[in-house]
Image (tube, rainbow, N blue to C red; front, side, top):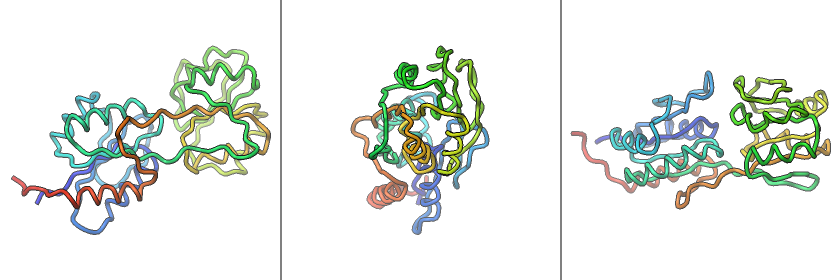
Length: 259
């Protein structure tokens, strides 16, 4: 019998956890492939086969799904990786491969939060001049061009890898990777005299302490809304739910003998 093949579009903590669950799951073996975009230097690799790099759009991904006889596709990319999510939906439909989106829930404001929602990084940039002069920017190294024209503001930019131009002229870069602690975030805001925090609604616990620290300090937070999951794609909120979906799917599908 040919082992069922699962492709995980990854690069997130949830994607690695799903790969670990599938790799150690009881029952018949799986062929497990995780695909990473290659935008982060020295990524944490999941178990199973790993490929790095793009597919060449939706058409290229559909061809890869067919060529490698993929039986289930999981889009476990970052909640803001809208382009690859659209490509995954189109490729899965073209290749007739079941698709699941794995998305950790977004953050929810609580009493004391001062959040200003923005639909994009560009909209977030337009809000900043009225909110403060010293900005803690935690939207990653990509997309900094949206803030490049704000010459009157100072930015503390935290990212895993060093950003490239265009970016704000007055900027200090802090290279770091979560999870972050509440005490550390409190000290960061205090030590850099931050007036306003800008972040994407990525969700998860690893980077959430900055929101608590901002609330305690009475600072406004500009929250960039995440793009929606493509229409018609089912969603799992955590790796365990995604693993159950894959197991149920594969249990119902017969696999032909090799050759």
